[in-house]
Image 1 (cartoon, rainbow, N blue to C red):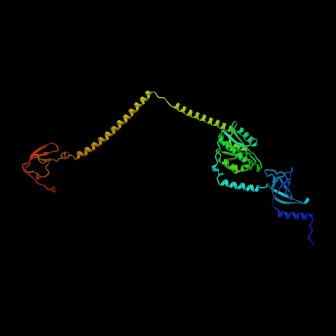
Image 2 (cartoon, rainbow, N blue to C red; image 1 turned 45 degrees about the horizontal axis):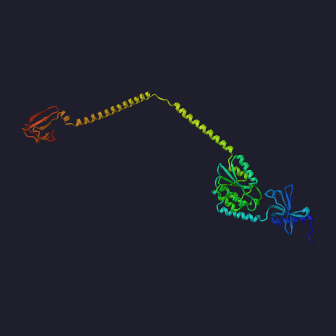
Image 3 (cartoon, helix red, strand yellow; image 1 turned 135 degrees about the vertical axis):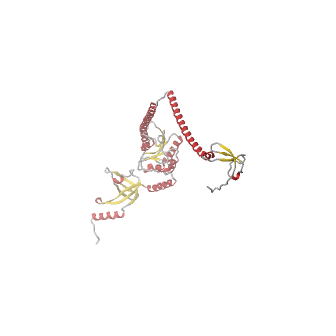
Length: 401
């Protein structure tokens, strides 16, 4: 006999089996009977030509979405099947929801990002710095959108009176990318803006999709003026954001980026002026003190000081000359003494004599062999001289004593 289940047991078994089989499924269909309950949950159905499926998206999941679906939207639901036992109904519990075809668009978008990144359009090194104090700002956005109002409001608060040039353009829908490209080119050709803000306020992914256009990305990269991209809310990052020189989270944030706060600049200038004045006063004070310390002297005093200096130098010169003369005189006496000790006269003074031939023909007689008996001789003494004749010759050996 087949097993018989109670309704509760069968429903529970069915719920378990469906959870295993359909724990995560993706289902595409058209939204119908959409209700946003005051609890925050969404109750709706999706249908196609042959069936209808009840769906629930709880508040914790739908709060992460940036758009709310409308009846008639074609969507893809990612979630799981749940059986509601009290009513015997099953529902698709939606955890994620996206427009039908969004997956293909996302793949195309990622492929475009890889292409532009490979070409270097996202490279930080090619991005230009913004001017620190621009004289005029160009804005490419809708003339009637909230973004323009927010930009002008912030600019007027931070730097009143700054010039803003608007190039109006559509920022969503078919043809919006071409209009934004045209607005950028007009501002560049105009040439009076020093920085451009390109963007719009928040919106759905479809609303912001024109800022993922490849032609727009290349126009931003080719701009002769630095561009700040301000597209959507902070969580939205478009290709325009990646290519632009600077990305702002919102249009208001872009306005804060492009201009400094005027009051802060005025305070800084005042501070510089006070520092300059204080520096000048210190410099003047130092020079005044140096002037007060300078004593002017009478010319006569300068002459007297010069004479005193000359006398001092003269005395030092004379003293140096005296010392030098004394040293040279002592040297002369020393050399003279040595010369006198070597003089023949000094030898004669010790009792020696010089014998010369009287005829004056031979000079000093050094040997008895140089003389003969009867020859006249001249004898020079240490004091005086005499003449004599040789009466006898005697030879003495050197060794004799």
